[in-house]
Length: 386
Image (cartoon, rainbow, N blue to C red; front, side):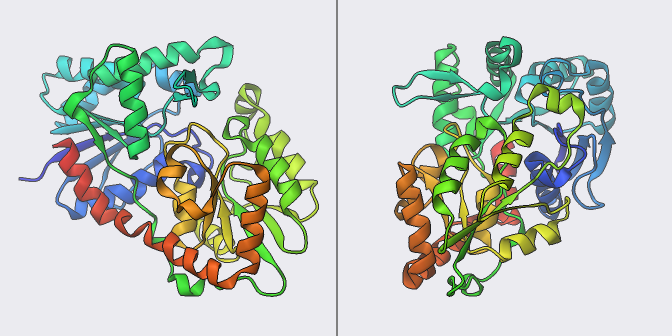
């Protein structure tokens, strides 16, 4: 008998789904879970997956804080009673206590798994726990952290993207007197098979120089100010940069909370040798932007537990240079890691001018995603939540 999976998904960017990694993850994973024999219902503000996945439309939360602090218990109970799941996946960890309450009220014995698509904290080099500034508006960071801990406690399984994320999650839980024990599992996100090509097609830069692509959100907490400084130093005869504007024009509610993407977009657009482009939410156009580049640049975000944008580049055979920290240091080849801005510039220039170095790392980049096909990830997913 197939397992019934209820997949609870919050979408933070309903107007630009192609920039919402959680939605993309669900859109790739739901069909793979169906292929593996699961009956999947996606509960979200927008449908994800193919026609085999049932869809329960939920409201769009007004802000990222409402998504964390205001789950609709009545709707959760009704949903559980109708779907009768064997497994519930809560992609908003802070909502897990409400989901556990709804399971109790509905009389369901379903396994509750929480997927940590983000961590609201990171650790400094001195192992000091640091609240993520992205969730600290009006001093709410500590409240988010405590709600996250409550969610971890409510789950039967806690899934994370990487070894780095597992280490940080276990350490953060321990600081709050939680022992996750055997319920902590590493399940990476799937790569998008539409963004995969033979690395032989990733031709080394020719005489016109190399194009580096930065395909990350432009929030201040992603370290974008440092990227602006690096871009200023990196561009020239050897390297031009292409910066993805993933959000476009955001609503006033979102810019009121954080206007840094708009500010950094303007700064980057004013730099010589930097082109700001948009895929307009179209994955075909996005693939074309990646295919026209030669290498990627990772985000300058110290608390990075994983990056779908990095995987997108690597699947296309683009070497990615990255700061030596977090998951980036775990995943990316050591020869492409840097500590200083000058080292980042030197790496970009070497990729632009050393064809043999470039070819080796194009192949390594592509190979690093080989175990991230949706089918392989779905199998690991079902094993982890069973």
